[in-house]
Length: 388
Image 1: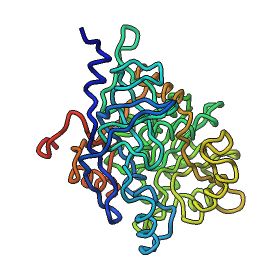
Image 2: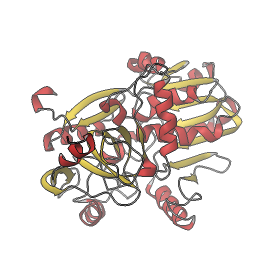
Image 3: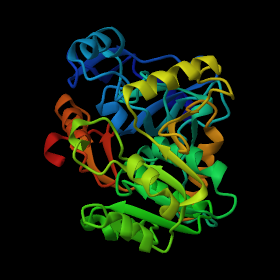
């Protein structure tokens, strides 16, 4: 009789489908006959059920890191991005675990290194970037499906790496852009780590959503008197600010510039030893961050694994955050534990099919910046365009 492992191994095809970045910035192409990767040492082969997408994917990985010069962006896209597979987040089942202790058929979730991508039917995943998905048991009745598991890794790691070093004394946390993919998970992780207050800044239509995800106070950034409303919230003064919205996008030109506002009002809004982390920055910020990352040893070293870069005016505690991917399996384990305890659950706004049209629509949705929660592409079982 054939064993379960033999059955799974025989089911691995020689070829697979992937989605890659297309010929031009913002385009995507479906490839049908791509060789299924062979896992190397310290890797497992995973059949991908779902892939979570993030703004960095929709911005072709380049994001705000280059000036908005079309010629330069097209050149970088042509030589460094085109043909690579988008996506960092995945959830799926193990189909080749010969290099690990994972069981064949185990449900897992995690991340892939930059430009190696998750919009593929099979991926060879580094062992230090994957963990078993939380499943129901007698002691842990809460589980998560593949779609929701695929929505969690990058935003969960961002929240954990940003907050964990600074939550020893139960601080008051302010989350800017609290209804987005990172923001709504940040609200929950702040509570998991023991924050005293968690104040969310979002639009009025997302008040209930943010409260459901753990916000103790909500402030509408559209309303006049934003500074006064932040002062009146029970969490003021704020010890930790997580800025998920500031960027160099031209659409932000006439909007609130939070780094400036908070610096000008820091005496009334922020505690003396406040910490300010933000996810977006100007090209010059990213260039300095990249240089420092190289000097400090790169993404694989403990010193350079993730990086803070000092920003803002003199006296500002504002710093740029760059997530660490390597050696995150135990951080994924912590996220899974919170899910099993019912303390953490990502919200998925829309699920798209694994096709050129589906991925294009998913990326366009992200770029609209009107996403509440996350966007996910379902790869297996395949969705038809009509099911979306």
